Length: 482
Image 1 (tube, rainbow, N blue to C red):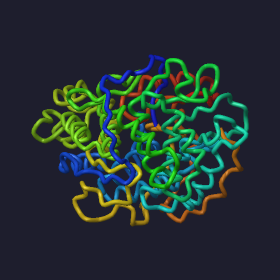
Image 2 (image 1 turned 90 degrees about the vertical axis):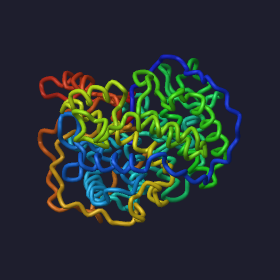
Image 3 (image 1 turned 180 degrees about the vertical axis):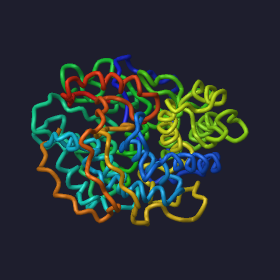
Image 4 (image 1 turned 180 degrees about the horizontal axis):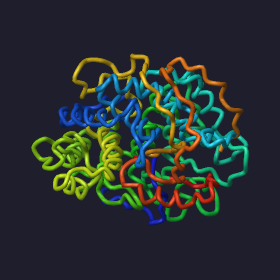
């Protein structure tokens, strides 16, 4: 999903082009009605149609758990496709360790902090019990992965647990934002967790994606020379801080306001946004996530402009041309849209469309991440809250892909931690759950986007790293997406 994400970049700071001084109370601001409820509904329907047996596939087939979670979040934001949402939630609950560990590869002792935090969030947003999700207490595990008082300026950071010394932790601002969101929605929110997120904000108002440099973790964004400020990371952080402010966290509201001001300054004339590094150009992923954050922050006109920009990349029966049969899908950028209209969506491009639609849809629904599953979505075709049904999928396919710990995904996302969660005894258990395949596909390289831009080239690099049957797992720096 959401939200797990992208490669780090060293391209220098993005400088805001517009100075915004308006101060709007952010905590508790209700989301405005979306610019086009029909567009959100159509995107939800298309995305739901891409699920197979409760999961979304990766670029080479098999289940992509990070993308599946992004799809659950997107559909929950609109309140649509309830049967698909419920089946997908059950599938994720039944495969927690396929997503946040390397257990499927026979490599035990590792728990990905960002992926665990994202699981905690999606369980809360989908209306499941985050303290008993597939038999795991995700809240307790997330808390165990927060850096303690002995971590100095890293105190409160979500980290990964491993039995081996793997160098610097790979968690980033997406991971930290999901930790804040998940903990705020499931109980008390530790102030240290919020403080660490705030330290990723530079004086300009934007947030950096990674808290680490080549020399190790830097205490704050302002203490990192040339820190790259990132639209997607800022949008995530703003929404997490709004949720933190609603929970009574100190300093969260002011930081969220300054982040929203910075986002406004990054909006293009046509309402779109770009990210940083390889996603610098205008794209629907960054636009959707930024638009959602602006709506959450009460920046209604800017959020509406972002939503309009997203609709310009959405296929319809009228404008779809050769891709009219995929009406509702949202292209990553203008080139993808034009190509699909001309020749349809190729099988090799379908993964990108799924990732783009899952995140861009958030800018159409305009329900804040902190409120998904709690408020009646303004785009819901029927007045049914999203978080009430217990997931009851009917099929649980054999997990044939390696875990894709995130951020996202995204993309999505180092305290000392306790032992592994107890053996699962799911309260949401799909029927026919199969044992993991003995020949899982190669894991995604840490740092790869899980939403948005096509990732096939990167995954091919990952495949080349597997030689003689030996898996080379890189537990260093990784990463959306989407």
